Image 1 (tube, rainbow, N blue to C red):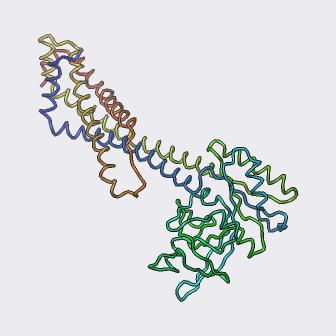
Image 2 (image 1 turned 180 degrees about the vertical axis):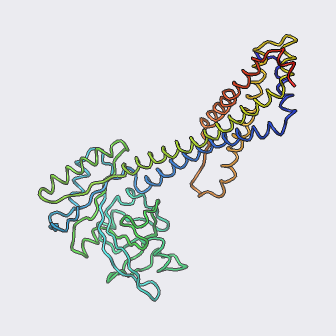
Image 3 (image 1 turned 180 degrees about the horizontal axis):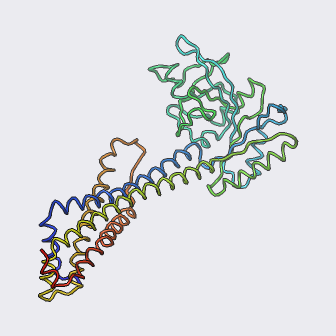
Length: 399
């Protein structure tokens, strides 16, 4: 049992060697701060990466005709609006569907022509792809039904064609057709040209694209699952639906973002383990430092230990004293390290993107404190045991 006298002796011993105690505590401070920061960074990074992937389109499943150079596709192999409508009603768990088809065209930006991607989109495309309308509005049902010559342009294209002015309501000539700009948009999460949305893209209602090109085929068919757990089921149902509606040699690539999300989670988990190991290694090193310092302390205080035993101090009291000293070093270092780890996210918050928050999980704080204190007790046990086993007669003769 730790008495008040034991506390006083332990504190006086640490105060008598302030520099040594501080340097020993420094390792614990670094180790405990590492554990908190590692868990915080790992969880925040994981959430950020997953949010970025999901931002491309929540619970998204998409299908495309597989291109085979040896066996050119036929007109009947193309994905169609009828396929899209069938998917809407036949697939259980489908919340929304949409389709796109794009061609390359040119627009006049100032004195130069720029190549743009002209994409016809069906209703529901904005919702499925999480497009953010910065100015104006998106297409409505009337725009699609009336084949209105309207369009939306990317923020980058608007800046090139309509510098320093609001493009909404102005005319934009794309190829041989003049469109009225309804709005300016951007992807909520950038796909860097890996989707139908490029840096310079013009969106038009799909019926209008179909009318001018005479092609009713879809390049990409999107289906949004109602919940994350339904993504795999919707993927299988869409694959079966297309196989039934297009029997023969046609092959379709049906994919979802689940594989990418799973990969991101595994990478984040592996990174967390690696970083936690680094934090634990720092704590082990600090624990070895505590043990070395305490062993030196036991050697230096051999006569003191012998004197205390000679006047009646029990073995358990000597052991408690040295364990308490090790525990004080580790617990003080844990508290300081945790406070530093809590302060760092607050200090760097102004440097982070506006939508990124770095909350410190309370579990990491508790785990860091417990592990740091356990490290002090574990590595302080050997010196404490050595001190407790000293014989009074041998200790008193020590010079």
